[in-house]
Image 1 (tube, rainbow, N blue to C red):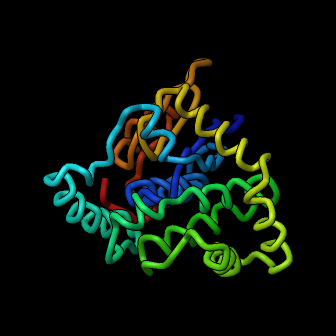
Image 2 (cartoon, helix red, strand yellow):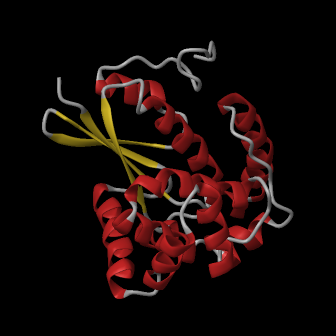
Image 3 (tube, rainbow, N blue to C red):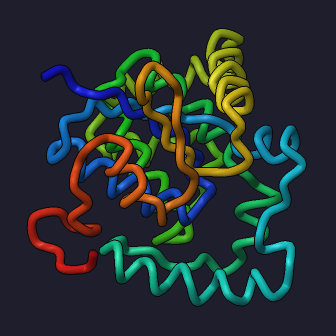
Length: 223
């Protein structure tokens, strides 16, 4: 039986997306799927859709602080809030990081999962920068890329081909109806179907004709 295509549109600025990313990376070896990681720019998604970050609503922000920590334990993801999450998310942002991931996807796609994870570790575990070239290089090096390959990728970050690719991926998500991150897309009976967030895995499993076994498939009892 051929594998079903599943695309994960994501931005490393989002803590909830980290949970979805790790779960999908675990299930890509459990379900009969071909997982495609699709870095996009969440800022563009929010602007085009008219959505607002949950943290801009005080009550949502207070809930999110507790919720993210609980979900980190549930999903077994080592998430920790940075000292100044608003600065990280709304002032510094992740445009450079998403361009960097796009360049990696275009040149070294086999490294995309590991580098994405390292950028989340910097943003949402160690409270480290992801905007400077030295920071991006450090993440890629920790992920296992060679210094030669890292230098080549960094040169591409400002290239129009990379910028256009990121814009194209972001626009593709918008055309599908995106309003946030993560967006998980598959195809059912020839039609695109997608779910939003890190709490729709049972629905996604049903769409794929697979079984949801909790956040840690094979060992988890958290259904």
